[in-house]
Length: 152
Image 1 (cartoon, rainbow, N blue to C red):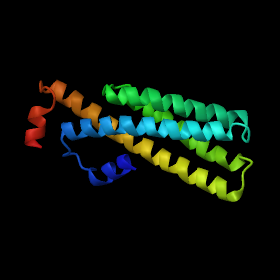
Image 2 (cartoon, rainbow, N blue to C red):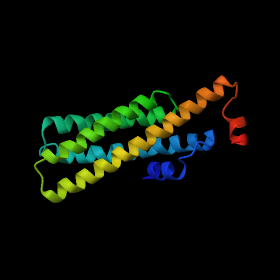
Image 3 (cartoon, helix red, strand yellow):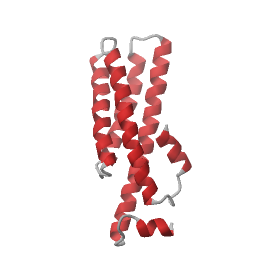
Image 4 (spheres, rainbow, N blue to C red):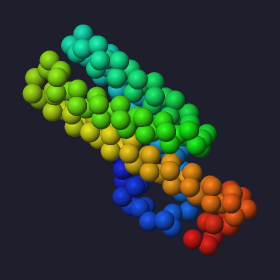
């Protein structure tokens, strides 16, 4: 939820680079927590769902851990990784409909995966904004956003 709230509150272009960096670090921690939570759900549901749901869930866990590292390092690869995770999480959300669960459990899983889709989409936007800012600063010869932050 921290990524969603950040994106809502900081949707304008005037967010300093240092603030974007802090959010990416926070998103890295959120990814680890999400990976643990999704890993638990995948492990508990492994016998109740098809192989496709399990594989997609495992890919989301692995991708979230890779993404956490990429976000921590402020790597440009975090953008495509997050884009892939948005697609995988959306796919897993759709696959919840085919799970052999009660309606209540299906609704809970659909809500959880939907929140994860929105969360990943927000991280994707922050990562894209950060990368664009870094490219702009490199083009203008600025280092580490210090000048940009003071003039924005």
